[in-house]
Length: 202
Image (cartoon, rainbow, N blue to C red; front, top):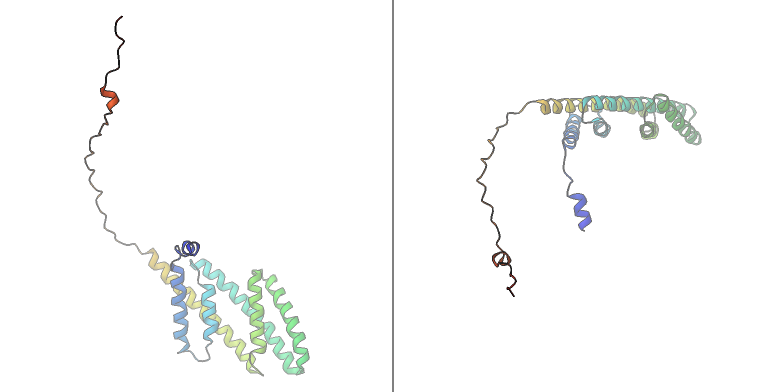
């Protein structure tokens, strides 16, 4: 128990955590307004793109859009082949080849390996989440929701960055007056008060 308390004693909510929470809340509110809006996609995008600085958020945004485009394009290709051939046994082969193409495309785009896996997730979602031609619309609205989530993340990070740079007026307190030092006390030992013994004359 003592070890757990020591590990959790330094845990606290930081500024980046607050920014991500605000961004997700905005995405949910937008879901009540925008039709055919994928709330989950937008919230995931904001969580991945919200960084401490706008430059870092912009970099995360470009990576997110890249893997979304690659996975979405490959997924649309799988959907078109599936609708044309209509053979469920070939779908497994198409998906396997699509995963390889997505990973290869992400490597060509020089995105991190983990983000390449996210591109494969998008491929799977586009290809097998919905039946029939609805999958093409699903891919289109997923890309739109990704763009909206990225815009929300950049806006939140920009606003919080401006608020952090705003100078604050702080009151300066005068330093405390030095107190009079108490005189040093000397300790007197009994041995110091007894004179040393002298030899008696013979």
